[in-house]
Image 1 (cartoon, rainbow, N blue to C red):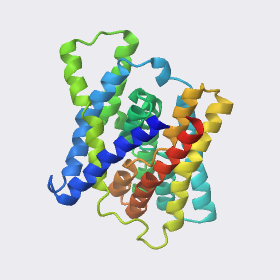
Image 2: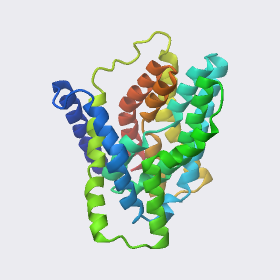
Image 3: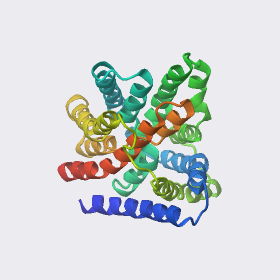
Image 4: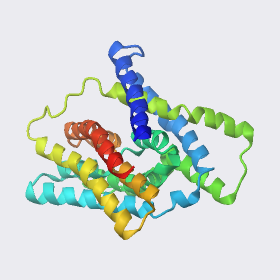
Length: 306
């Protein structure tokens, strides 16, 4: 528990620094967006390549991969059933809430949590790869259909090939599997740049928290709380049940699978909803409140399982 508390304290302090920096206007307008872009296109790919090139491939392609996939499908389906059938919400609103209930923040929070709590960023690799390669293209395809009334197969198929984190992750796995040595003149700069990735995304996330007041839009409270509840409560329970009773994960892997399933909704949801103009305020509230709720949820998980 001490390690868990220290890990969250480190994350919380860096996020708080980002909030203060934004509040004081130190970096100017759109600085958070710029930091996120640098982290996404430069630092995180370097981090994922160097991490996966030297990680144990049994961790990446373990039974935790289907646990992540099945828990994702379960939460999206459950939300769709409740909001679509019982609450009778429209397709666009159901899509936003379902993605919010299932798509977890494997970058901005997953990598820091895996690094500072489990001591190994590769612990989040199974979830990260599943979401980048399968879940995100599917979510984009659904949003595309909802917004345009048609499916753009070209966008769906090409999406993984346009994502630098996916490309770097695949290259890292290939280098690892083939046993290709990485020259120090290449490894050291990549390690140095990759080390900036986690601090940058935590600072940028803290900057994004300023000025957002949740539940300000009438009529969205039930959907928001439903999506957040499924994300930070039901999804870890589903991951635990699947990991323990279906796939028989070892205790450490079961702890990692359960804790990482309790991560908040990915900020990509806000980007998707903005791009396709689908209930942007609902997406913003789900991301913000799930981030707040995930902290005590992860403490509870750690207290029970650690």
